[in-house]
Image 1 (cartoon, rainbow, N blue to C red):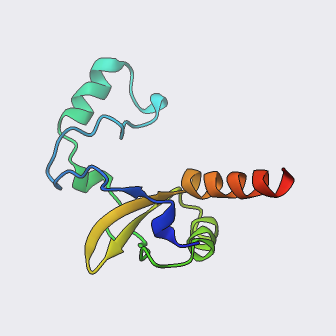
Image 2 (cartoon, rainbow, N blue to C red):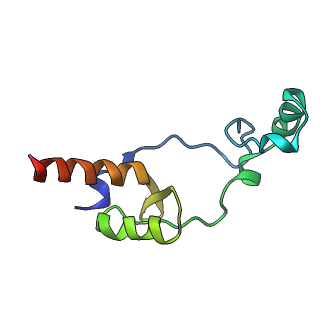
Length: 108
């Protein structure tokens, strides 16, 4: 099975200066209250929160190879790139979904 068969296709993207980074909030003990968290994230950009040079994989790579990379480097997702263009995202959940489906078929 190849990565293209189970990746999420056409992921939503944002530019590096997009300020809508609500998911990247620091841990609770760093701030006293919601207002302090809001003030911090108000000026946080994608560039400040992203992994600058993420590991990527090709859509025609074997899924088992991708799973090994996810496990070895303990990462939860990986951009799928074809010819320098983002074509999808592969997550641990995507790989587990395939594993579960294959094993349910074997057990049936």
